[in-house]
Length: 301
Image (cartoon, rainbow, N blue to C red; front, side, top):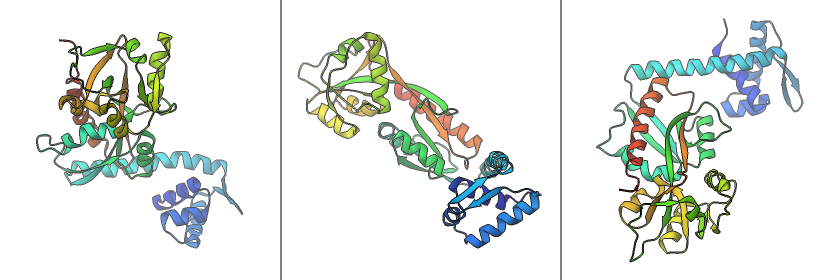
């Protein structure tokens, strides 16, 4: 019968590329790790690894075991998490949120009026999209909520969040609650640099209009952009979650961009050590929060 502990050791060696790197990562002596691999090969009756001075290479049998072994370990982790969740045991859940979502959601997630799930202790990590992805992959976060990355498949769709035009308040503030994208692109804008997921989305939306964005400054920091807009140093295009409280408190004016409306798809990525049923419950609860947030959008009466 396959020894799951030795399977984990084998997967670690394969992923880290050498016995020494895997031994350091999983905190086991290298001679002991070598012994376990020899026993695993003996148990299965096949050679799994070619040992070389600069690391290891997988045999064809090793490649097959790595592919199937990852699935087995993932299913085992899911089963263990599912059983603990069904038993009602309290557990910690770490959620990575992008800066704009962190602004809008953190208070609501912890508020007494919104009891997410009584059996979890919630931890919020603020992280950009790629950082959140890495945190989930490393096991430092259980789930990450971010803008959809077309290169990643399998993330769970939550809601589409509109982008809004953001400007400073003036004494003669307009009552107009929407603005066309063509009008927005002619404004002196403060935007993230090219390559930023939000900037790429904005560029793609403006391209069919044949209009060139008027980029006054390129700044990637959300707080810095909001501060500059507040001081009248330019205008911005931001996710609604980034400015909804500023708009409600009359620190900034936000208008829904129309003709066409543009938005970003928010998705949830999950790790392997969280029960699928818990992920389902979290997705329902967080989707409800995000939908209620969109209900406060500035639209035409």
